[in-house]
Length: 252
Image 1 (cartoon, helix red, strand yellow):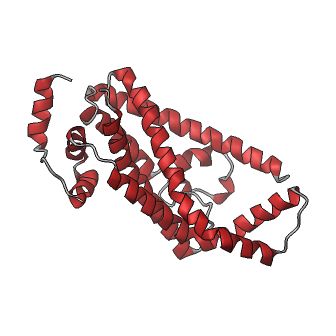
Image 2 (cartoon, rainbow, N blue to C red):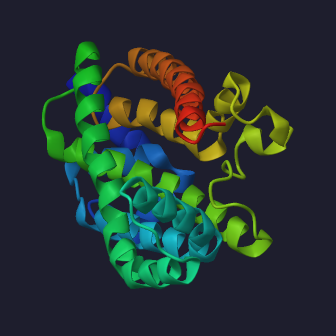
Image 3 (cartoon, rainbow, N blue to C red):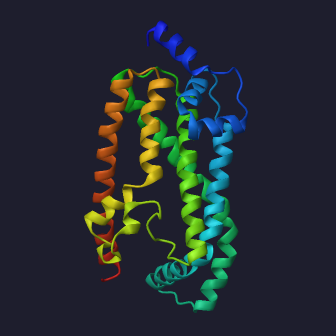
């Protein structure tokens, strides 16, 4: 990126040399360009790791009661397929034994997703000449993923309060407004991905690679818009396919 342009951005955003945790979170929501320019100079990954992990565990704790029935059914079918039979009480006791182990493992799913997402996005945005250096992109995507985790906790809290099914679509998605009879359709899968925190994350990816990665803003926003459409359509297609596979598996 041209040095004069970079200096202009730094002057316009008045990026401080230091930002405490509360300032970073505030900037993430209200002034992301300032946060991304700060990350460009001083990338950090420890705080995103901690917050992602806390949110992952909190989400699992909030939906535990609502997910027990589905997990017991899953265990019953799994053991039945292995030629073993357990009573519901036995399965519930078994599930209680595994509960805290499951809570402890919960963060790893999201941390691995963060790792893969960061690497894939880095490779994609290299097409529009993002700067090299992975640490700042791990930091950038980590902060953006905090938004996803906030959305997940909000949804889990909604499930806990209302007693909805644990597998229900995000309450912050368009799918939550549709007729439940549309579940399993491409339209329902598409609507489930048109979700507040999902769309917000894509907007921040476009900004992040412009301000942190030095990509021309027009190119960054255009590539991000294309990527968002592709991901949303692919996710809707996978939703349709996976529902068909589950239907075949359980004979429905």
